[in-house]
Image (cartoon, rainbow, N blue to C red; front, side, top):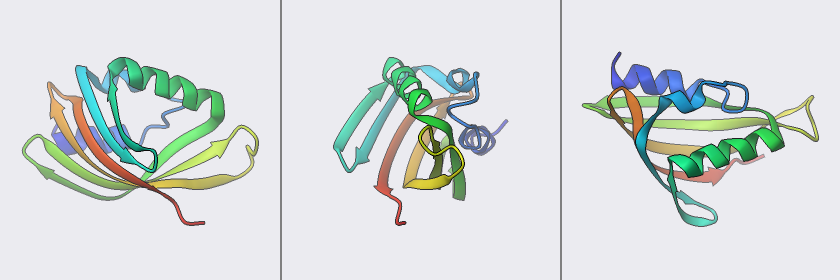
Length: 121
């Protein structure tokens, strides 16, 4: 499977509902995230904790991919995350817009560098 196919499949998962989401990550995973809270750095354990927190707060957490480009083992993806909050299970809302550069190694998500902005409502 190409890096683009792996990342396309990864970003179409529901990060709250899919029990196999962690199987997509390389053991040496690292992420740098430029967000409204500043620059955040995550490793594999941090991402496990992040997904646990998402599961406590959301019924669903899914991305809609807008663009996907591949160059070697790097994939650039532009997407919007949509969530269904525990407090309002009947309504899905756009949460944030992202641009991520993802490096794939050993057919797994190895490194992510991303920037996000809260979605306009």
